[in-house]
Length: 283
Image (cartoon, rainbow, N blue to C red):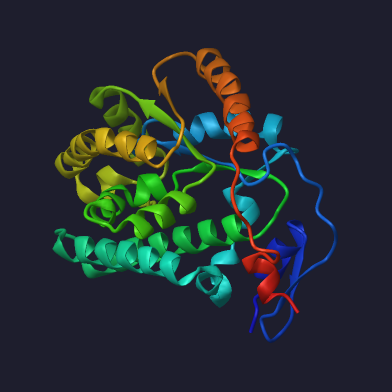
């Protein structure tokens, strides 16, 4: 049974779904210049990505989609069916490595299960966006590079030329806004979050304790260099933003970055089939 919230989400982006799960377009979708582009906001939890993101949303809502526009599409079983065999191979390896990593971490079963569910939702939503044509780009808090950096690096290491090409195609038109800040700045933000929303899923100090939260920040800083290297190796453009700078400074940097990735989209050429993967699922 398809949930009503899932149907409402699909209606917002120009699709409908019947009881059998078959998708079809409701209307022709106008194409914004940003169409198909993904900009991921990356940085450790507590650095201020969401705060910045919320302040710029109104300015970009007519030409870009946001994660909440795609809420509930992860509930569609068809998301993974949109992948080619080689893409499915890459995604399967990434998800398996993520699962193995969670098992090794010193986390309770409910916490590990919740994180893996979140990662699966992120992957399915990303696949659905890339394979469907929504006519707009996606501004994304987090994303595959942030959530699966180490797994992607592992899969990429020693991969065959064909598999490398598949990975590059999966990340085509994806770019990164990399937020940087001192450990002290991030910890102070996490302390504020603990006071304002104690027990929330992203209350890392409340859920893990101060020391583990600090260790998490250190691990992220160590992996951030790998993330940037991975992004560049996949053809992504990367801009670094000082999270401790003023909002206006951050906003100006972002505004200057957006046209460069839109222009890159128009410069890129890629071979496409006569029918998109989404069209192959439509009836």
